[in-house]
Image (cartoon, rainbow, N blue to C red; front, side):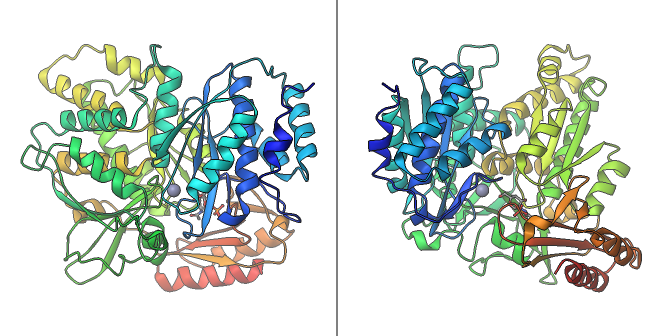
Length: 536
Ligand code: NG1
Ligand code: ZN
């Protein structure tokens, strides 16, 4: 008799839509919510299997479709240290999701358990949460049915931002160890961030910031966080919350949010910001953030992930030097090919820090960032964070400061390791980080923008017959196939000043993306159009 004999009957309530092929991609599974019930059920089975494989460590399941429209939803797994699911397990998720019948699902599951040497008698522990989408609670029911069918200890954390769930997973798995990450509760998250923020803001004057919450889960969670933060009078920041309507699900990510602002290169139409007022936008599950302001000539200025990365790297460099730890804390920045070339030049030339370029997808960036003592990583779209190596944390914790100035810098550095959500990009934590740095540097957003000038750039989405034909290499900066395409792109790039362009198949949409930058707007646009013509 199978240890998993309850699976087929449970699965029968969540039948797989016929003629559908599912794939666990960079963002887990993501699609129209009405297609997702069977997928979520099967992801639940996999979460239990992964927990058993890891001796009962807690695995997280997040139900969200981030910046996608309200009718979409998605599901992704969180590994024990709060990272994304290990890439070698993604194909298992895909296999389970595509099993055509309940019996086929059982046999796929059993053979996976056998191949992976997983014993059904090992405990399985899973925690889960969801964003504010209307379909979320229905999908949670599918998840719960799966977890019950394979005898899993499960805890419902209800509504959370994606990074809050990542935080909780890490807390649960490190409790009682020397690497304990915090209280595994939502309150513990707020207390950790707020406590660190109070310390880093001591003696500083915070500014005022308007936060567009994309009408997603970030709204209520930011309002909760604010209750723990010092007010502006107490040395904190004045935070104005807008677009935090979660009662009308159709408003989610609609004409607002980080993705809207980044792709449209404009403030949400509802914005009432006056010139030079500092604003930021979160995405639907609050793991991305971009800043922006309109200047006195009504020009819109975006401060995206590249800008947050350069700001953070510059501040951490300052603190390394001021604390006397510069030698022991090698800082590096990780970007993708979508980072503006001017940001890369600024990091290497002005900040004198190394830059690594990885393929798109946070798991690649995160992994590369762990190669530094302090690794700063951001995608241009605003998803990113800073990770500190165990050696860096030890150096910071044990260094004996030689002067009051060193002591002060060290105190700030220590608090930053608590303020920053090191598990994954976190819009709320990143916002407090940016506010802290601007307060320390005494900068306005215009000062921040003035550090370097972005190269004009253009991102084009090209519909192609078969995107699988497009194979990219060299961190997605070059096309290996179709044959000849790269040579044509190189020839076009060579004709414009400061030209750079690449094409790659999207991992989340059925399209090829073309990016181009050049010395002038006209040249960037023309280069993008011509390269789009090559891949069409
Ligand atoms: P794809 O569709 O593979 O380009 C997009 C974003 C990524 C990342 C993923 C996951 C761009 C150009 N690409 O990937 O940065 O966020 O979605 O959500 O923004
Ligand atoms: Zn997101």
